[in-house]
Image (cartoon, rainbow, N blue to C red; front, side, top):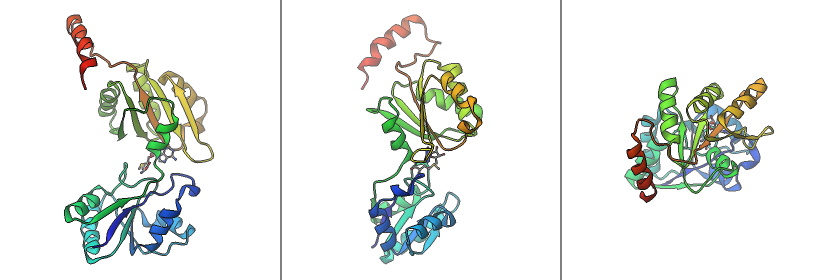
Length: 248
Ligand code: SAM
């Protein structure tokens, strides 16, 4: 059987395309791309002539079956998404899962990813973190997912749409004003920016100029102390305080 290669592509700076990524994309028999038109520009830029087919959220199931058949026939296939690392808030899980089930070799190339890029430069603890991708769109579900996530005392990373960044920060300002927050914006692009502070500071910063609210964002939140639900009686809080440090 052939092999499936997971190939990261740049998140905003073409120079982040690795020589190995170019080599693999040029040498495989088929590229599965989230959006063939979008990726067409990248492939053209690097003079890669390999045939591309689409694999996106709406055809992943059928396409994965087709691609696994091709892999079993002996073709080598590369998977790319619109930007960054496939499967990280991007399609591909079903394909990789099927490959593993059928014993097809899957190999991932290291490369650009907004999550690790933002985390490594944000200045919040990196020894333990949770990545939750995009929060739910509906405001109530969002707020409860957000608060539930950040209440454990380690770093939390979210991908956030420019349409919702202010709402999310407002929820943090209202319910967890003491949390430390970083917005990492336009990573690897000309206007790359990291802004760190309490949610209230970041709301002020974003609101000061319309342009600051545009672009691509990673949101990172850290609350130094585990939040004990307020509904608990004092005695239970004391007990919880004693027990929490003993948990693995
Ligand atoms: N697979 C991609 C990766 O490896 O990072 C992520 C794909 S996800 C659909 C797109 C989201 O990633 C954006 O909405 C934004 O939150 C984040 N993102 C992607 N590129 C970024 C960049 N250059 N700067 C900041 N955030 C970015």
